[in-house]
Length: 171
Image (tube, rainbow, N blue to C red):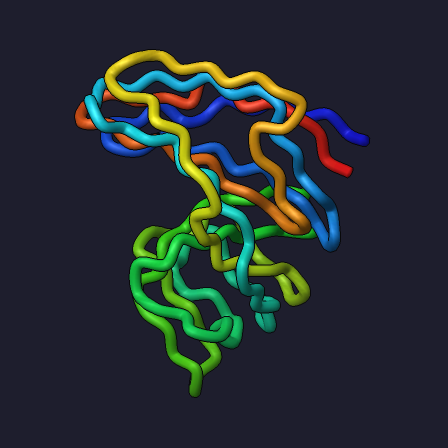
């Protein structure tokens, strides 16, 4: 078991933390702390539902990924880009897909270069915890877990939100 602890980015309308996992790694979140200014804010846990393999080099400063779109790929899908070479995983949002050209285009530039064999994971919501306009902590042997692949924890807000800490283990 490999422990992890991550802080989410400071956001206005969304804060997120991506927990990378390669292959069949399982992630178990054991602690989370989040703060939001939105009365109805929610912590949303997303797990990988579909995966596509990168076929061509994609530079960090571009939006286009050389990968055949995963089944059902659509605009506004939340994805995790996983670089096997660096072990980094980043959140992205799909802008458009082209099955014929075998490309997935994101709304923003890639934050990491991708190489053939890296992966793009469609992330689907698997659970939520209400936070509200407050700081919420949850601590248990298992707050959330995934069977395999990366996870994203997201928190929404109106002007200020932050995932203060998410911690657990990867096995």
